[in-house]
Every structure is written in structure tokens, then in C-alpha cells.
Amino acid sequence: MNEARYVAVGEELGIAEEYLGDPSTTYIENGKIHAAIAGNLTIDQEKRKILIEGSHEKKRKIPKKGDIITGFVYSIRKSSVGVKIKTVNNLVAVDVGLIGNIHVSNVSKSYVEKLDDIFDKNDLIRARVVRINGKEFQISTSDDQFGVIKASCKFCGHEMQRKGNNQIVCDFCNNHQRKEMANDYGSIEEILSF
Ligand SMILES: [Zn+2]
Image 1 (cartoon, rainbow, N blue to C red):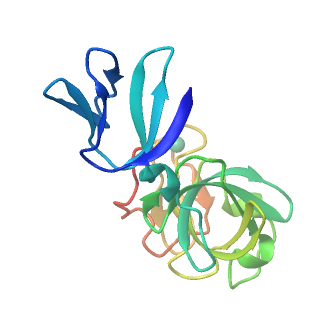
Image 2 (tube, protein in one colour):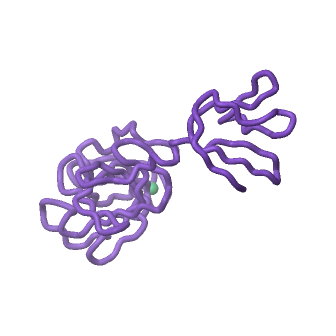
Image 3 (cartoon, rainbow, N blue to C red):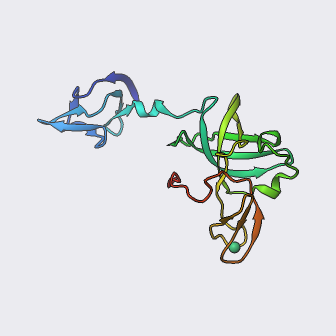
């Protein structure tokens, strides 16, 4: 690898006989390779390959205070719940290992005694970012629109249905559980295929 300079759309980059243009970021016209997107030109001299690193690489979504995130619960400790962040303001976050942390005091407006009573691993939650410490995002589910938005039965894997304010039930195996739910639990269309 060598040479990384910024190129504009349409700029001539090389001769098609000599180089292989990356099909998603370059195009060929009259035997010449041109830039199909703006970005940093990268030429792999060994493989004779030309590609452009587009600016989408720089648009990684890193949450800010006040943003709404969704993510999956991956750890439940005594006083906090760890969440792998998957979307930021409904945009898929590039998977760079962003971790959200819900402190027990930020779970609910009402008193919470045991976190593993109301969260399970792999619950999908929606939360607001309230504080940022380095790479860790303190998030809160303490509002009606926040909390678990989708959960699967921990025994049989079927999707759990809401029952009342703080219960979910598995229609398949009749497992009942408490859950700290968002007010629109179960009606979510924002779930993306990751
Ligand atoms: Zn079940």
C-alpha cells in the first residue's frame, strides 16, 4: 500500500489495462479508471488495485448526550446492566464495540431491587444517553418510552408478549416474567437486521 490522496468524482486514476478498479468506488471510461465517489485514493501496487475510501467511513455514529440508542443486554450485574449499542437515533451504528451502561438508579422512576428480575440477556432495549465516560455511555431507561422493546423467552426462544404494565408472557411455554418495558413494547418496527 502507498499513496492516499483525496480525489473528486470523475477524476482519472489510472489505466484499466494496468490496474484493477474497485467496482463499487470506481468506474471505467475509455480505458481509464475514474473515481465514482469522492474520498481517499488507495492504490495497492502489489495487487494493482485501485479503490477509494469514501467518507462514509468517517460517519460512524458515536452517540452524544441526549441521543436515543437501542442495543442488546449482554451483562447483568448487581448495580448495572451492560448493553451493546446497535443503533443511534435509529441509524445503525458501525460496530465499533460501543457499550452502554444502565446504572440501577437510571432504570426506572420506581424503586428497582434486582436487575435480573427485570432484564435478561439479549433483551432489546431503547434508552437515552445521559453521560459519557470515555468509551462507555451511561444510558437511562427511566422514562415511559424507554426500556425493553423486544424480548425472547429464555426457555424456548419465542417472542414474549406484553401482559399488563410490567409482565410479559410466552404464549408457547407459558413462562411469565417481570420486565421493565417501554410503553410501545412489542409494536416495534425499528428492529433492523444487523
Ligand atoms: Zn417460552
